[in-house]
Image 1 (cartoon, helix red, strand yellow):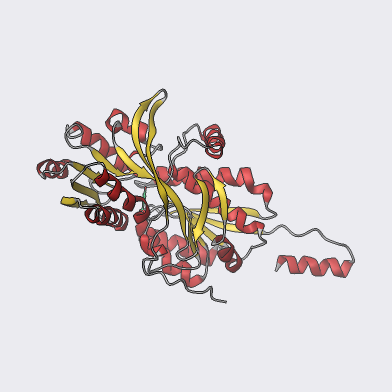
Image 2 (cartoon, protein in one colour):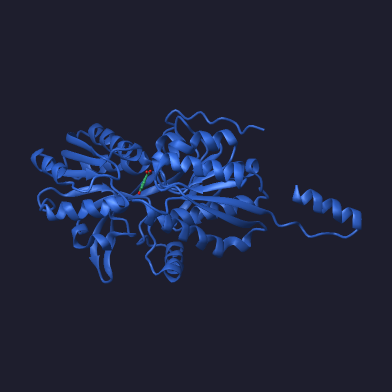
Length: 390
Ligand code: PHB
């Protein structure tokens, strides 16, 4: 529209005008309060860093409107509506909780607003509820946990007890892990889901795990809940007899030093660790630390890669909701995690998974990579990708 008007002006006045810069309005929908507030801040820091580093590669400029989900699905839905209907954003990026993603999915799909998911792993969003408007640059819940079931059984672990918060992400992560662990020949001897954002004392669950006869405990916790859980697990005296495993958000670089020695020896799996030994990761990690004073976490990388995907999409000339949605699904670039691409069958990112142990390093706790498991493409999980409506 803006381009057409300027082009018309150019013709009328007889002057050749340079191509107009498109201003893209981005709604950044993240938790800036609640148990995942630190995650939202790290995603935003990564997002801003990529705009700063790569923004000059595109003619587009970006205007960002921030909204706080508070990790509450109804609040997040209200904020998504405001961004779409009132602010008239061209695109939304962010979303940390699978519950929030489930709540806003129909709104963004129905309105035809592209959404770059920068964390929430909800399997449905790139499965049965997939949408050509939803592109995920982070991970899916099953993508992270499925390879761990097989790997742990290969390490000689026969029986596990599982724990996770009782909401979509907790259930999907544990389901994916237990399915592959059982398929490999393992046994799940007990399983509990703890009230999400409400559990302060994990003692009763830890007592159950101890009495279960398991060889190991496998969990998903993130943010504030991860810090409490890891500390309580250690002070309960379980770590020596009942090793702790999980998805790697449990010991994220973002807050592992708040967990302290309690996190040492915990073995987990994730799509990014700051110790990945590549030039692209070293350059990113240095820039992120210079900007924030922190080691980059998976959350920081997800924000960084979400903004890079947006920049790559605009480099093709995409500028409105429809063309952006189309271009986002086709982005591919070399990032701190390696070469990233989007699976056209689901719009989920394809990436390898790292198994890592949290160990003491020179400057606090660090991540020792034990195994790199092959690039994980999710099965379609019921996704029949609808065409983009005109
Ligand atoms: C999710 O709700 O999908 C979720 C939240 C925090 C994480 C990972 C996944 O660290």
